[in-house]
Length: 142
Image 1 (cartoon, helix red, strand yellow):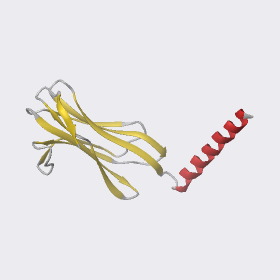
Image 2 (cartoon, rainbow, N blue to C red):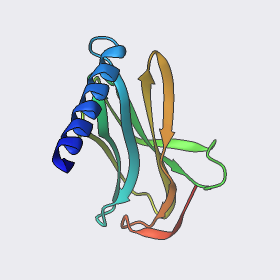
Image 3 (cartoon, rainbow, N blue to C red):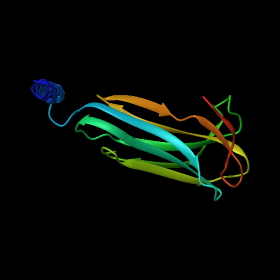
Image 4 (cartoon, helix red, strand yellow):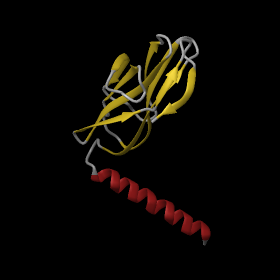
């Protein structure tokens, strides 16, 4: 009896997911989870990484990734582009990277810009200080 109820629950969940995905129309993503983070490589470089962690449904998700260098972690308006990359479609479990050489101790953060249902969305990483070797210095800032 437990097996039958589990099987029924799984089938109902699968049917709900398929019908929910169908509601978005052909070739659309109902839900996607994108992430952006940065890492120091310990070789004098910092890398920004955008990743499609999960997607329900299928669609083309164009993504622009930008790695910024800032002198003040509290004032992001004075930012300089350190590196950038873009793709016409960040597929499920795919990653996009942009790396830059570190110029002395500085703060870095990354942003991705992508489009959902015609609306432009922006997702930013934490702000992290890296030394000239690309090693994290101190705690990250919002």
